[in-house]
Length: 164
Image (cartoon, rainbow, N blue to C red; front, side, top):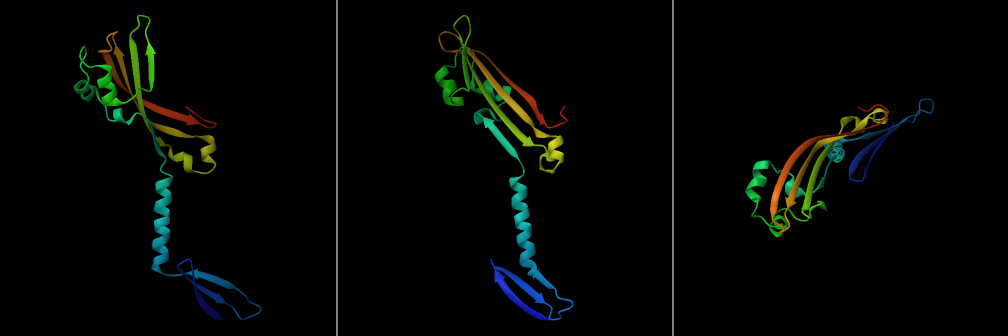
């Protein structure tokens, strides 16, 4: 039997080869605790990548609650310029029939469902779930906050052959 070692990409590899022509074999062994550590590191890296978290929207309202927004907005006093400074540009702007302006802010945080990462099962059922926050602000014709509302709702996005 022949035994030789080599280093490939920093890994110690042992190659064992039989000299017996009737029972020829070749075995490659990856050696050492370093290899186990590297495999573990790669597994952790891919697990983190496949975690599947995503967020979209205006992050200034990510942790908003009715209490925190009431500290920033005062009905009849806070102006559009102050709102823009506190929350940035709105995601959507519209006008009512009476000419008042409405600004809407949204933020969604989603996590992939575990079935997304299971081969074949993800064809039957996959998707994401999480929560969505909305802040809607109504301004009067003087561009001062007249009313606002903060809401949180659960989001469940499903796709595949079987969805809820």
